[in-house]
Length: 190
Image (cartoon, rainbow, N blue to C red):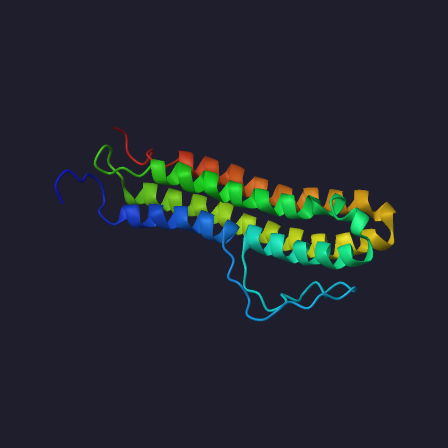
């Protein structure tokens, strides 16, 4: 390979990290069938037949709760959109890390070693898996929380606090991902 410097397989791991950040924090695979809306919350361990990840799962799960709650109390729909918005932010975290990683991979301009690829892979996995966990938490809490809020409005502040702590998990993953990504390029003294 002319003009390539560093390890030839290293960019594979770097790009895998960028993909992991985006896939785990954003990806959603639509479920087959029509979701059934019931006024009672789904059990927390139920995935309702969907195999989504991160932001998409959080958005879908809490969106179902908003739709179900909106049948009983339509005046609370806009107030109950908070979990959906918070779940959407998770996708932005994955996008940020994916862009940081992909702009750092240019083996023709600067040597790119396995250390750099592993740093980018771990960066993407840290952000992506934290986004996945936060999306699951936001979806479950958002679904049950907006339905409970329709029955008892005093629960709104508690729901928001739980959602903030769930979102913080993804923010921690973003911070660790940025730190790990910044380690790429420091494997050898140039």
